[in-house]
Image (cartoon, rainbow over all chains, first blue to last red; front, side, top):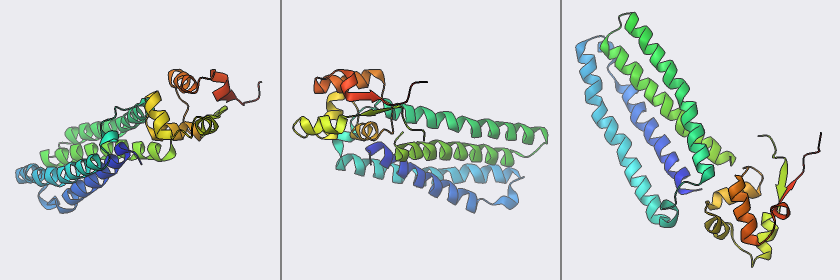
Length: 140
Length: 73
């Protein structure tokens, strides 16, 4: 498994852990209030920490174990995988934006729209990282 | 995944070149070991540049490294 594939696995686990915690623990009963917006903003601090710690430790650990690979530039296959993943992530982003527009037209609260935006971001990242891992595994 | 319409003799050529490893070939060509493995297994179609670099590493013309196998229509 290449260095980049390993860091992608770490990113996937960190993403699921951080935002899994967020969506499981968000106080949905107050989502329509101003406090709901502040709760979301406040929870983004631990989310960032939960996400960054495994990313930093994992990347450093794999770089120490295989420094040669860590310093290699992306080759053409990896660039193609990178672009394919980013391309696929565009679709959930568009859907999320439309969902937010609908929420805005319906007069939904700031808390609802903020959570739709966060869910959109997470879905796009999961598709990006997940599809890139799929292509790495398949040997694309 | 659709099979590529060509095969290659990279594995044999590596063996004949003092049992060159995939990593060594990758270093010479400028790609990762995993990319060489994917090309060898027919899972990845390299760019013309990388194909030429591989052939030049073995001192062979392109056709001796990659062979078109799809029947002509």
